[in-house]
Length: 103
Image 1 (cartoon, helix red, strand yellow):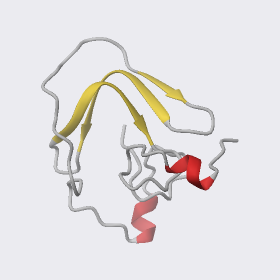
Image 2 (cartoon, rainbow, N blue to C red):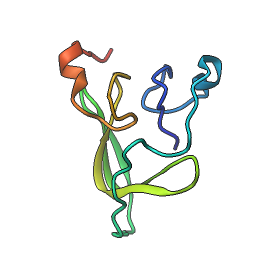
Image 3 (cartoon, one colour):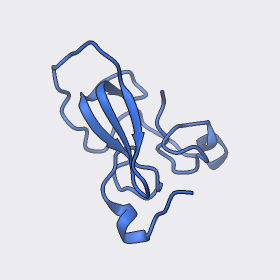
Image 4 (cartoon, rainbow, N blue to C red):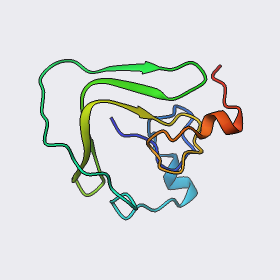
C-alpha cells in the first residue's frame, strides 16, 4: 500500500495519485526519518480506523520511502487521515486541534 503524503487523496491515508495534479514533489525521504527497527515478523497485518482519528496498523509492517529505503517497521503505528499531520503519512495528533471527524 502507498500512504498519501500530499494530503489530497479522498481515500486517506492511501495514495491514489492526487499529488500529480497538485505538483507535490517528494525527494524520496522523510525530512527527519525515524530509525528503522531491525525487527521482523511473520503474520497478518490489520488496518483499524479509529473513529474521528488515525488509521491504526496492527501487525508487522514496513514503511518504505520512494527511494525504496525502509524508514519505519514494527508491529503497531498510526497513519494520518485528517491530512494535516506535520509528519505525513504518520499521525501526530493534529486531528484533535482541527476537530477532524470521520463520516
